[in-house]
Amino acid sequence: MSVRVRFAPSPTGHLHVGGARTALFNWLFARHEGGRFVLRIEDTDLKRNVEGAEARLLEDLRWLGLDWDEGPDVGGPHGPYRQSERRAIYHAALQRLLATSRAYYAWDSPEELERMRRQAAERKETFRYPRPERFPTREEAERARAQGRPVVVRFCVPEEPITIQDALLGAITFPPEQLDDFVILKSDGWPTYHFAVVVDDAQMAITHVLRAQEHLMNTPRHVLLQDALGYPRPTYAHLPVVLNMDGSKMSKRDKHRALRQVLLRALDARERTLEQAAAAAGVEAEGLERWLHGRVDAALEVEGLERLARWLGVRLPEVDVQDFRASGYLPEALANFLALLGWSPGDDRELMSLDEIVQVFDLKRVNRTAGRFDRTKLLAMNTQWAARLPRERLVAAFRDYAAARGSPFATLDDPTLERVLEACRGFRTLADVERKAAFLCVPDRAVAYDAQAVRKVLERDGGRGYGVLERALPELEALSAWTAEALQAWVAAFCEREGLKIGELAQPLRVALTGGTISPAIQDTLALLGRERALERIRRCVAARAAGTPDTP
RNA sequence: GUCCCCAUCGUCUAGCCAGGCCUAGGACACCACCCUUUCAAGGUGGCGGCACGGGUUCGAAUCCCGUUGGGGACACCA
Image 1 (tube, helix red, strand yellow):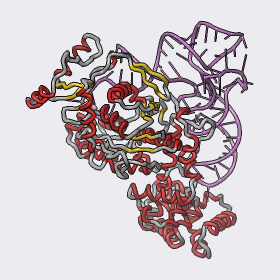
Image 2 (image 1 turned 180 degrees about the horizontal axis):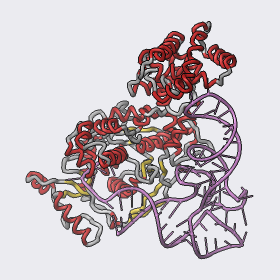
Image 3 (image 1 turned 60 degrees about the horizontal axis):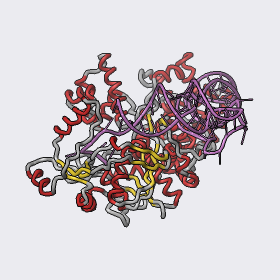
Image 4 (image 1 turned 90 degrees about the vertical axis):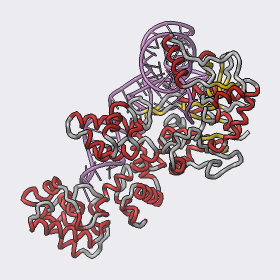
């Protein structure tokens, strides 16, 4: 039987790195085994579904380098691939359970359930739903519904220990008192996750379920349902979870936490007021207050969160695949890093492409230990990937990055982008390239001079830097060839003649050309700018000194 | 609280299943030095770990038990 696996996200937002790791492992397994990778959208909770989230999810997956054989966009023989379109399938399965008394109707109110839970807690007992002596009939259930009761269907859990087999963890036995008659059909008529997952996995002929370990406790429920419905049990493999560096669970909450911390400090120091913050975020002060103390993340939507972060000058931690993309990470590096988080090839290889990983991916080599998401390691890996990727691929990645964040680099042509990338060799992220070459996208007359750089490099020692520029300018103007090679030769010759160290020429030039002290090697900076633009900038810089303009040199 | 999972450098990990080849290997980070035209990158070296306690064995990082620690799950969310 050929391998079939699935990744089943909920359309609630962007793809989280934890989810990406799960998707990746499923994909790697499928590809290694020559099986099929199915994408299914779990959208049975209508309230939580976010407009456009599905499209974003698919885009994030594709960006990472994953593809799927069946899914909501490409279809397939086991569709539809959105749970919201499979209602009839769930109801058919449900009827079988009801007909054999493996499930029953119930209509307790949330308040009643809450009271029972509280009472159990007071008695220091684990709450278990009290199964009725006699199961209500369909007619009784309908009458209750007509009276406005929230009618659900609960699964009748067998009173015996349940043992599941996990490909990674081995056999795990759960005592029966740990499980109670859980809800499989919600009062809104939609199946719960447990029921939908079991029906879909069976109907889609899923052979292996690779999912995060946080689902381990759900597995006995699923297996029990499979047994009751006469479905085969798929092979389970519960992947270790991904944690933050501090050992906490990695989640979207992290952004809120980071921001809260900074805002709280700013308020304490009286640097900002709550009203200002609320205005910056575009929310009510009252809502922000609640968010600040009450941990109600919903009070601050993604946009508000980002506005507030910008206003406070905070860099939000990356948690979604999209965040890493916007921070200038390469998909090759993220995928590689994620693959190594919980899996290793067994030798010392680390830098591996998805193709290479597919070749050797083996479930047996997946760890059981939770792994911490080490951003510095990812950064290092990104640096290595940037150094080893072919030029064309880097250009495409840089273009993707620039487009994603609306950078002016997106408008430059490929040969120029290629030269920029080449000049910035050694960069860690694409954001570094953008920063280092930013001077290119600034109009010549709008170069912003860094006051400290001007002081240190140009004005110091009675304007030594300016003097160098004044002597260098006519020579540059007379230069016949304006290539990096010719410029480098000129730099060497000029310094030789003047008795200067290269830095004593390069730094003043750099400030004149870019306004700051960070740019590619000086010959590359000059070449990238081109003769006219470079000379114009140097002339303006020299002239500004003569004029004594205060804020420009 | 109950249940479940896990345990090798600060972090990711190799070694564990089939005990000796391990005075435990690699990578990231860190430190030092080198290179240098700024920022990076690069080169060389260094620091650093089998959580603890009992067994089993001639021999344990490897097998067993316990302790401790970490994590996860306990919804009409998925």
